Length: 284
Image (cartoon, rainbow, N blue to C red; front, side, top):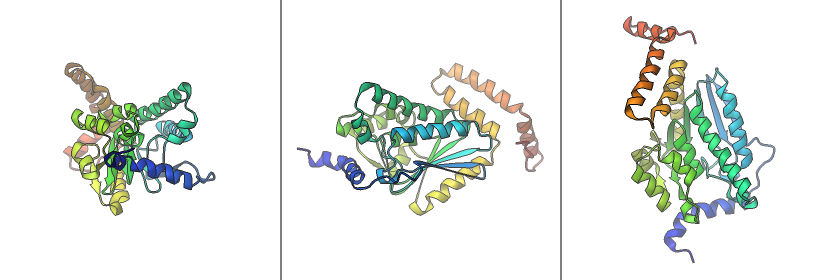
């Protein structure tokens, strides 16, 4: 028998499975939507009947699209969001249970890890625009993105432990965003946290009302799109590269990076424009 306390934290899983049974996915609809405007690519997870759970096909399509964006110099910023009532409910548990052999499960988690790593490797900044539920691998997506804006109704969890599954792969992203004690509390207790708590512990950058989510995310993306792309590319790469280095090596690598950045022709133009109190004229 499940205790009332545990049942409270399992309820999102029960709601997810119940809704999944009652609603069928529209096969004619793409499971991932892409829209490009003003150098900003918006990717929308589009499995709303299943709370955008990361099925094998969705992970594959997400990886393919990210690979395309990686080569697309016209894209300067990426927004990642979910269609329907949730951002992302994690992996598709029903699909996984239907293919519960070691080779399949290992390949699925490898594909998911490849998607997460590709987000970090993209030259463009990636913003998570979060509403509703972001659980397990969905929370991992939030932690993996470079920036995150969430609506006040969003909830976050790595609650696999409540069904006996420690969220090991989401722990990689979570532990690189929040302090160790906060990460372990979320991973071991499986509790859901609200948007103010996610903001407090550093999982997200901004918390806004539901009606302001799209506009706030877009404003952030537009601001990023107005920066020198080569500087953002170099800066993002350097930031993640130096994180786990000893401080001496980190400063060595950072000094090389900022030297190359400083001597870039567009950067020199930016510095001259600042000194001359005018707008820069970049070649991009």
